[in-house]
Image (tube, rainbow, N blue to C red; front, side, top):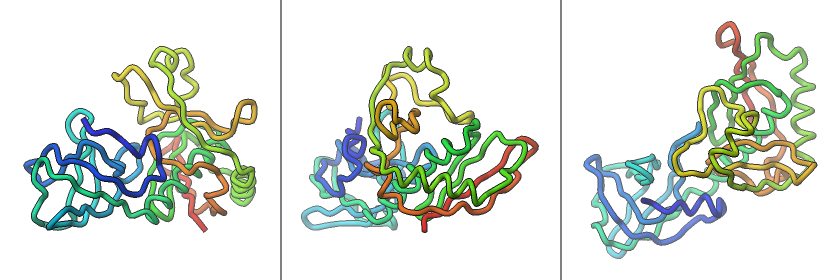
Length: 238
């Protein structure tokens, strides 16, 4: 099991860790990590590992067996041995841009209150696929509504509920294609806003900014037809 430090503090950029395993594919498993592994449409973090007498670049992080996170080197290199203490540092600028896009996509699902059938996040843009037979008539109005919501400077927090509590509130799940992970007995929710001023509340395991003011201005890009019932809406950081 890898302790997921990014879940408690998405702003933690560097920490130490101990190598607990090396995979047959050349990946590195640590006892704790700041690297977010690819999941939920959000790509894994890149960065570096360093230790006494060595170091390497990390191309990405992926989920391993059980609750393990596997760090994948950018190119073949000498790996730290099991038991070695390493310093891990993420590419912070890239991570923060991913956080900005991810939080903006949550708000996009507010201004387009329709079921989400897919999504993807990149460092400069993201997109959501909606169960939407017809494209929005006024893309400019949609963009203005989204930027007004972002400009409300809402806090972004997380909280936990049980599987049973989620079953009792199925409307919290907006995604049709990806269901929240179950089995641990608890599910993480991300809340944008506070109390009666909450703009969005939904299950999510990804990293987010702490306040919507960090997102900045966004632009709605292409809106593509993807099948009879689906429209793909692109969002860009300005």
